[in-house]
Image 1 (cartoon, rainbow, N blue to C red):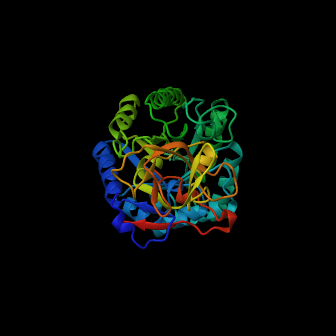
Image 2 (image 1 turned 180 degrees about the vertical axis):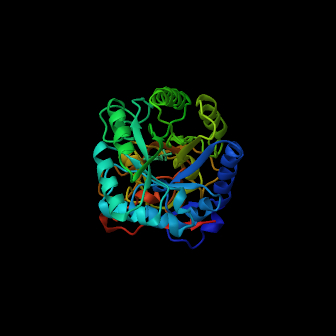
Image 3 (image 1 turned 120 degrees about the vertical axis):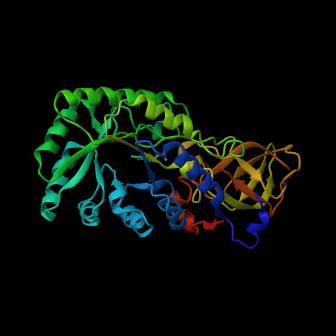
Length: 379
Ligand SMILES: *Cc1c(COP(=O)(O)O)cnc(C)c1O
């Protein structure tokens, strides 16, 4: 990281490496060109307009989870027909906005929502395409807060009532059943859960075919993980294995598409939270590096117990032979970025980079403690 470009920029701020984002998108395109795979970007991971424009320029679709995300996606160049809208509690206002914008698909998460959407679509006199989000009951082996594909979960429709849901959609002239939608969790770094998901989809496809029901697409959701420990060695996720697993496991029929909704895998590695050391506090047993970024800027460590690689970018090349706890200034004991971190001798004024922070970083920033939101530098 060339810290000269940070000269005069007020800390803390998110720095996004545009070249790495473009290379990541190139890698995705190289794996999906000429296949039935359509990639959607999950906007909730990072909704910086400049980042959205870079992604929409590739012709990707957008996975949105609120009315404001739909509006922003359209403003930033995503075509309405490539916008899919998911969420367990879409308000009437948000649904009507989606219908009026002419978005491509509503991902439905409950039987109740089918009735609501049918009613609102009939109010507008427009037919809308829907996908039913199925809870496939797969353990993705990730953190409990970010595993969504298991039973007893607010997301998705239970397999046992899926038949009823399909019938309900088919019964409404205002709803067009496009496909089935799945999302089994996040930060998944092994192929096994995706393979199991594809097997489950094949079973469902075979079962519904017997009932004379066909789907135009299957949406396998997002969830591909990244290497938080080694951002330098693995700046781009293993897209080849991911797409190969899905494309080779699914038994697609002629003309069927498969969709995915990647968030983290697209934007995480291109972003770092850059912060300044306010002071180094010498404790009795520990030394604390207190930085000007806190959980209001990057909440993942406090919320999920996540760890972002910490680098002192003002002391590059110096031996990492000192042990520090790296903490933020916020009045919460969970406002800790790293315990017993090996760093070079660190001083007041040094710049600290929290790596792999492009996803669920700035997007989850808050004004807690009445702090300013972090800044942005895209280069
Ligand atoms: C959050 C989310 C995604 C994106 O997840 P990543 O782990 O960032 O890829 C995709 N689909 C749905 C339905 C989501 O809720």
